[in-house]
Length: 266
Ligand SMILES: Nc1ncnc2c1ncn2[C@@H]1O[C@H](COP(=O)(O)OP(=O)(O)O)[C@@H](O)[C@H]1O
Ligand SMILES: [Mg+2]
Image 1 (cartoon, rainbow, N blue to C red):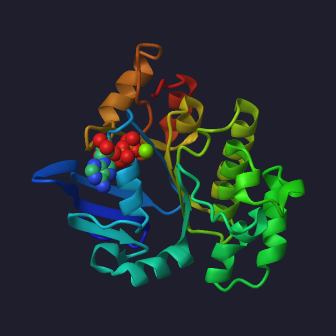
Image 2: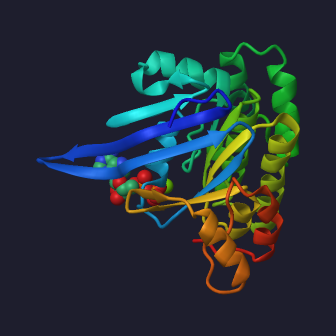
Protein backbone atom coordinates (compact mmCIF):
# COMPACT_ATOMS: atom_id res chain seq x y z
CA UNK A 1 0.00 0.00 0.00
CA UNK A 2 1.30 3.45 -0.81
CA UNK A 3 0.34 6.79 0.61
CA UNK A 4 -2.16 8.36 -1.69
CA UNK A 5 -2.99 12.05 -1.42
CA UNK A 6 -6.66 11.19 -2.13
CA UNK A 7 -6.70 9.17 1.08
CA UNK A 8 -7.26 11.35 4.10
CA UNK A 9 -6.26 8.43 6.28
CA UNK A 10 -3.79 5.71 5.49
CA UNK A 11 -2.81 3.03 7.99
CA UNK A 12 -0.16 0.37 7.45
CA UNK A 13 0.67 -2.59 9.73
CA UNK A 14 -0.61 -0.78 12.80
CA UNK A 15 -0.42 -2.61 16.13
CA UNK A 16 -1.03 -1.65 19.72
CA UNK A 17 0.16 -3.50 22.81
CA UNK A 18 0.31 -2.40 26.40
CA UNK A 19 2.38 -3.69 29.28
CA UNK A 20 0.31 -4.78 32.26
CA UNK A 21 2.63 -5.76 35.09
CA UNK A 22 4.88 -8.39 33.53
CA UNK A 23 2.52 -9.28 30.68
CA UNK A 24 2.15 -7.80 27.22
CA UNK A 25 -1.47 -7.33 26.27
CA UNK A 26 -2.11 -7.11 22.51
CA UNK A 27 -4.97 -4.67 21.91
CA UNK A 28 -4.68 -4.35 18.12
CA UNK A 29 -3.36 -7.02 15.75
CA UNK A 30 -1.55 -5.77 12.60
CA UNK A 31 -4.11 -3.88 10.57
CA UNK A 32 -4.31 -1.88 7.36
CA UNK A 33 -6.92 0.66 6.41
CA UNK A 34 -7.36 3.50 3.97
CA UNK A 35 -10.14 6.04 4.07
CA UNK A 36 -10.77 8.33 1.11
CA UNK A 37 -11.54 12.00 1.65
CA UNK A 38 -15.27 12.49 2.04
CA UNK A 39 -15.96 8.85 2.79
CA UNK A 40 -18.07 7.63 5.71
CA UNK A 41 -17.05 4.48 7.52
CA UNK A 42 -18.60 2.65 10.48
CA UNK A 43 -16.50 0.62 12.90
CA UNK A 44 -18.65 -2.02 14.58
CA UNK A 45 -17.79 -4.79 17.03
CA UNK A 46 -18.43 -5.98 20.55
CA UNK A 47 -17.40 -4.18 23.70
CA UNK A 48 -13.70 -4.58 24.50
CA UNK A 49 -12.75 -5.47 20.92
CA UNK A 50 -10.45 -2.44 20.50
CA UNK A 51 -12.62 0.15 18.76
CA UNK A 52 -11.81 3.06 21.08
CA UNK A 53 -8.12 2.12 21.06
CA UNK A 54 -8.11 2.21 17.25
CA UNK A 55 -10.00 5.51 17.04
CA UNK A 56 -7.64 7.20 19.51
CA UNK A 57 -4.64 6.23 17.38
CA UNK A 58 -6.26 7.23 14.08
CA UNK A 59 -7.09 10.65 15.53
CA UNK A 60 -3.54 11.20 16.80
CA UNK A 61 -4.54 11.08 20.47
CA UNK A 62 -2.46 7.98 21.13
CA UNK A 63 0.52 6.37 19.40
CA UNK A 64 0.67 2.89 17.85
CA UNK A 65 3.20 0.36 19.13
CA UNK A 66 4.30 -0.25 15.54
CA UNK A 67 3.17 0.63 12.03
CA UNK A 68 2.29 3.83 10.26
CA UNK A 69 -0.62 6.25 10.42
CA UNK A 70 -0.84 9.06 7.89
CA UNK A 71 -3.55 11.66 8.36
CA UNK A 72 -3.64 14.28 5.59
CA UNK A 73 -0.30 12.72 4.57
CA UNK A 74 1.20 13.62 7.93
CA UNK A 75 3.05 10.76 9.68
CA UNK A 76 1.33 10.79 13.07
CA UNK A 77 3.38 7.80 14.22
CA UNK A 78 6.54 9.91 13.98
CA UNK A 79 5.04 13.00 15.61
CA UNK A 80 5.36 14.08 19.22
CA UNK A 81 2.36 15.22 21.25
CA UNK A 82 2.74 18.87 20.25
CA UNK A 83 2.94 18.08 16.54
CA UNK A 84 -0.04 15.77 16.81
CA UNK A 85 -2.08 18.36 18.67
CA UNK A 86 -1.41 20.78 15.82
CA UNK A 87 -2.71 18.26 13.28
CA UNK A 88 -5.76 17.67 15.48
CA UNK A 89 -6.51 21.39 15.79
CA UNK A 90 -6.29 21.87 12.04
CA UNK A 91 -8.00 18.78 10.72
CA UNK A 92 -9.70 16.62 13.33
CA UNK A 93 -12.98 16.64 15.22
CA UNK A 94 -13.49 14.05 17.93
CA UNK A 95 -16.61 13.02 19.84
CA UNK A 96 -15.46 10.97 22.81
CA UNK A 97 -17.43 8.19 24.42
CA UNK A 98 -17.01 9.94 27.78
CA UNK A 99 -17.59 13.46 26.29
CA UNK A 100 -14.52 14.91 28.11
CA UNK A 101 -15.97 18.37 28.55
CA UNK A 102 -14.00 20.82 30.67
CA UNK A 103 -15.92 21.23 33.92
CA UNK A 104 -14.79 24.79 34.62
CA UNK A 105 -16.05 26.03 31.24
CA UNK A 106 -19.66 26.68 30.22
CA UNK A 107 -21.29 24.79 27.37
CA UNK A 108 -20.56 27.66 24.97
CA UNK A 109 -16.95 28.02 26.16
CA UNK A 110 -16.41 24.28 25.72
CA UNK A 111 -17.75 24.46 22.17
CA UNK A 112 -15.68 27.55 21.31
CA UNK A 113 -12.38 26.09 22.52
CA UNK A 114 -11.32 24.20 19.36
CA UNK A 115 -12.21 27.21 17.21
CA UNK A 116 -9.98 29.39 19.38
CA UNK A 117 -7.17 26.84 19.19
CA UNK A 118 -7.52 26.90 15.40
CA UNK A 119 -7.58 30.73 15.41
CA UNK A 120 -11.01 31.04 13.85
CA UNK A 121 -12.53 34.51 14.17
CA UNK A 122 -16.24 33.76 14.50
CA UNK A 123 -15.96 31.25 17.35
CA UNK A 124 -18.73 32.75 19.50
CA UNK A 125 -21.30 33.12 16.72
CA UNK A 126 -20.56 29.64 15.38
CA UNK A 127 -20.66 28.17 18.87
CA UNK A 128 -24.05 29.71 19.59
CA UNK A 129 -25.42 28.54 16.24
CA UNK A 130 -24.16 24.99 16.78
CA UNK A 131 -25.59 24.77 20.29
CA UNK A 132 -28.88 25.94 18.86
CA UNK A 133 -28.68 23.22 16.19
CA UNK A 134 -28.23 20.52 18.82
CA UNK A 135 -31.17 21.92 20.78
CA UNK A 136 -29.26 23.66 23.58
CA UNK A 137 -29.87 27.34 22.80
CA UNK A 138 -31.08 27.85 26.37
CA UNK A 139 -28.09 26.09 27.95
CA UNK A 140 -25.18 28.24 26.68
CA UNK A 141 -24.06 29.34 30.12
CA UNK A 142 -24.59 26.06 31.91
CA UNK A 143 -21.63 24.10 33.22
CA UNK A 144 -21.27 20.37 32.41
CA UNK A 145 -22.33 19.44 35.97
CA UNK A 146 -25.64 21.22 35.33
CA UNK A 147 -26.34 19.19 32.20
CA UNK A 148 -27.70 15.67 31.76
CA UNK A 149 -25.60 12.98 30.07
CA UNK A 150 -27.48 13.42 26.80
CA UNK A 151 -27.03 17.20 26.95
CA UNK A 152 -23.31 16.83 27.59
CA UNK A 153 -23.18 14.49 24.61
CA UNK A 154 -24.75 17.20 22.44
CA UNK A 155 -22.27 19.83 23.69
CA UNK A 156 -19.47 17.42 22.74
CA UNK A 157 -20.98 17.05 19.29
CA UNK A 158 -21.23 20.82 18.77
CA UNK A 159 -17.60 21.12 19.93
CA UNK A 160 -16.48 18.50 17.40
CA UNK A 161 -18.10 20.43 14.55
CA UNK A 162 -16.96 23.96 15.31
CA UNK A 163 -13.57 24.07 13.61
CA UNK A 164 -14.99 22.51 10.41
CA UNK A 165 -12.80 19.42 10.66
CA UNK A 166 -11.70 17.54 7.55
CA UNK A 167 -12.34 14.31 9.41
CA UNK A 168 -14.69 13.58 12.28
CA UNK A 169 -14.07 10.65 14.62
CA UNK A 170 -17.01 9.76 16.81
CA UNK A 171 -17.09 7.07 19.49
CA UNK A 172 -20.71 5.96 19.97
CA UNK A 173 -22.08 9.45 19.15
CA UNK A 174 -25.69 8.44 19.74
CA UNK A 175 -24.99 6.07 22.63
CA UNK A 176 -26.50 8.25 25.35
CA UNK A 177 -29.34 9.81 23.41
CA UNK A 178 -33.00 8.92 23.08
CA UNK A 179 -33.95 7.75 19.59
CA UNK A 180 -35.42 11.10 18.46
CA UNK A 181 -32.38 13.12 19.56
CA UNK A 182 -30.13 10.36 18.20
CA UNK A 183 -31.79 10.65 14.81
CA UNK A 184 -31.36 14.42 14.84
CA UNK A 185 -27.66 14.12 15.73
CA UNK A 186 -27.18 11.47 13.03
CA UNK A 187 -28.75 13.83 10.50
CA UNK A 188 -26.41 16.62 11.63
CA UNK A 189 -23.36 14.40 11.25
CA UNK A 190 -24.36 13.33 7.74
CA UNK A 191 -25.23 16.94 6.79
CA UNK A 192 -21.65 17.81 7.64
CA UNK A 193 -20.47 14.94 5.47
CA UNK A 194 -22.66 16.08 2.55
CA UNK A 195 -22.21 19.85 2.78
CA UNK A 196 -18.60 20.20 3.91
CA UNK A 197 -17.24 16.91 2.56
CA UNK A 198 -16.21 15.94 6.08
CA UNK A 199 -14.88 12.39 6.30
CA UNK A 200 -16.66 10.35 8.97
CA UNK A 201 -15.20 7.53 11.06
CA UNK A 202 -17.92 6.38 13.44
CA UNK A 203 -17.80 3.70 16.12
CA UNK A 204 -21.35 2.58 16.70
CA UNK A 205 -23.68 -0.13 17.93
CA UNK A 206 -26.55 1.67 16.23
CA UNK A 207 -27.49 -0.41 13.16
CA UNK A 208 -29.27 2.51 11.51
CA UNK A 209 -26.26 4.77 11.91
CA UNK A 210 -23.88 2.08 10.62
CA UNK A 211 -26.13 1.45 7.62
CA UNK A 212 -25.94 5.11 6.60
CA UNK A 213 -22.16 4.84 6.21
CA UNK A 214 -20.67 3.88 2.85
CA UNK A 215 -18.47 1.22 4.44
CA UNK A 216 -18.51 -0.94 7.51
CA UNK A 217 -15.52 -2.59 9.12
CA UNK A 218 -15.63 -4.87 12.13
CA UNK A 219 -13.32 -5.20 15.12
CA UNK A 220 -13.12 -8.58 16.79
CA UNK A 221 -10.55 -9.12 19.57
CA UNK A 222 -8.21 -6.57 18.06
CA UNK A 223 -8.59 -7.88 14.49
CA UNK A 224 -10.08 -5.55 11.90
CA UNK A 225 -11.99 -7.09 9.00
CA UNK A 226 -13.80 -5.62 6.06
CA UNK A 227 -16.25 -7.55 3.89
CA UNK A 228 -14.96 -8.44 0.45
CA UNK A 229 -16.77 -7.58 -2.76
CA UNK A 230 -17.86 -11.27 -2.99
CA UNK A 231 -19.37 -11.17 0.48
CA UNK A 232 -21.20 -8.01 -0.43
CA UNK A 233 -22.77 -9.49 -3.55
CA UNK A 234 -23.58 -12.78 -1.78
CA UNK A 235 -25.28 -10.84 0.97
CA UNK A 236 -27.23 -8.87 -1.60
CA UNK A 237 -28.38 -12.13 -3.26
CA UNK A 238 -29.44 -13.82 -0.03
CA UNK A 239 -30.90 -10.52 1.20
CA UNK A 240 -32.54 -11.35 4.54
CA UNK A 241 -30.14 -14.09 5.64
CA UNK A 242 -28.19 -13.01 8.75
CA UNK A 243 -26.13 -10.48 6.82
CA UNK A 244 -23.94 -8.52 9.17
CA UNK A 245 -21.93 -6.75 6.51
CA UNK A 246 -23.48 -5.61 3.30
CA UNK A 247 -21.56 -2.64 2.00
CA UNK A 248 -18.27 -1.96 0.34
CA UNK A 249 -16.68 1.28 -0.65
CA UNK A 250 -15.56 0.04 -4.08
CA UNK A 251 -19.06 -0.84 -5.13
CA UNK A 252 -20.88 2.45 -5.37
CA UNK A 253 -23.77 0.98 -7.32
CA UNK A 254 -24.43 -1.70 -4.69
CA UNK A 255 -24.81 0.76 -1.85
CA UNK A 256 -28.49 1.38 -2.35
CA UNK A 257 -29.22 -2.33 -2.80
CA UNK A 258 -27.14 -3.15 0.25
CA UNK A 259 -28.91 -0.53 2.33
CA UNK A 260 -32.25 -2.01 1.37
CA UNK A 261 -31.29 -5.24 3.16
CA UNK A 262 -31.03 -3.33 6.46
CA UNK A 263 -27.83 -4.76 7.90
CA UNK A 264 -27.93 -5.96 11.48
CA UNK A 265 -24.93 -4.80 13.43
CA UNK A 266 -23.95 -4.96 17.02
N1 LIG B 1 -4.24 1.33 28.59
C1 LIG B 1 -4.74 0.10 28.69
N2 LIG B 1 -4.19 -0.81 29.48
C2 LIG B 1 -4.66 -2.06 29.56
N3 LIG B 1 -5.72 -2.50 28.87
C3 LIG B 1 -6.34 -1.64 28.07
C4 LIG B 1 -5.90 -0.29 27.92
N4 LIG B 1 -6.72 0.34 27.04
C5 LIG B 1 -7.62 -0.58 26.66
N5 LIG B 1 -7.41 -1.75 27.26
C6 LIG B 1 -8.16 -3.02 27.04
O1 LIG B 1 -8.14 -3.26 25.65
C7 LIG B 1 -9.36 -3.81 25.19
C8 LIG B 1 -9.97 -2.91 24.12
O2 LIG B 1 -10.46 -1.72 24.71
P1 LIG B 1 -11.27 -0.63 23.89
O3 LIG B 1 -10.46 -0.17 22.76
O4 LIG B 1 -11.73 0.40 24.86
O5 LIG B 1 -12.51 -1.50 23.35
P2 LIG B 1 -13.93 -1.04 22.77
O6 LIG B 1 -13.89 0.43 22.53
O7 LIG B 1 -14.12 -1.85 21.54
O8 LIG B 1 -14.94 -1.40 23.82
C9 LIG B 1 -10.22 -3.95 26.43
O9 LIG B 1 -10.09 -5.26 26.89
C10 LIG B 1 -9.62 -2.96 27.40
O10 LIG B 1 -9.85 -3.34 28.73
MG1 LIG C 1 -15.10 1.96 23.34
